[in-house]
Image (cartoon, rainbow, N blue to C red):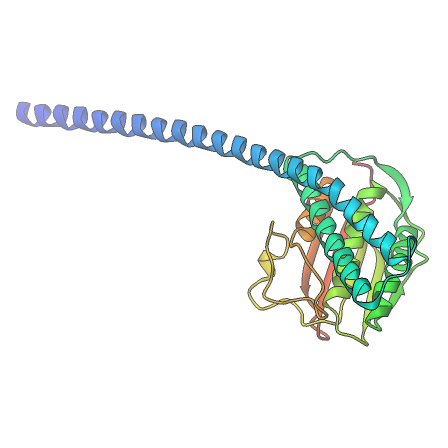
Length: 276
């Protein structure tokens, strides 16, 4: 009996020693993980700061290049021959593409750093959407795409940051035009979700849709799907990621999916009606 007690004593002592070692190792791992996580957070913030500074410093001279190119295109300082006009047109278009990219990078660096200050005011989302459709119509006309606005007279008012939601609406409208085939239609819907007490915006394009298995990549940063705009338009892969952060800052939801009834994709977002 005494031998059994001795054995039990040493087994218990060994077990306690093992638990002590395991607890020490766990504590060490947690401490190291926290340290590395903090370093990663600092590096990401540093990257976003450098990215934003670089984009900001490049944007101003690039805007000047585009401005002078447009001035030459307008024949404001003399007539150009056909070859010169072609070259100036290329410079202007390339500058515009780069400006779009730089603006996206600046927005991305801000929202990634958590800098989303909302100026919430009660407004009519329907009027905002109607205005943005009018502004993007020339781009749609170039591809003979008809934009149909369903329920443009929705008078429900909600609180939102007008400038930032315009950015989201513009991004979704622009994408729908980029990814729709020529001579097709784009349907825009606005409706009140009674169950969620939210105002929802949806847009149905007439394009190739979202490739199977890539739905989860839609709102990722710098994520491009294995599908391209239908007429060679440019895409930075940042617009949806920025839009997601803006909508979520409003306590709303944003989504994208394939249109099960027809070809193409459906993108939308919902904003809560209550003040948050």
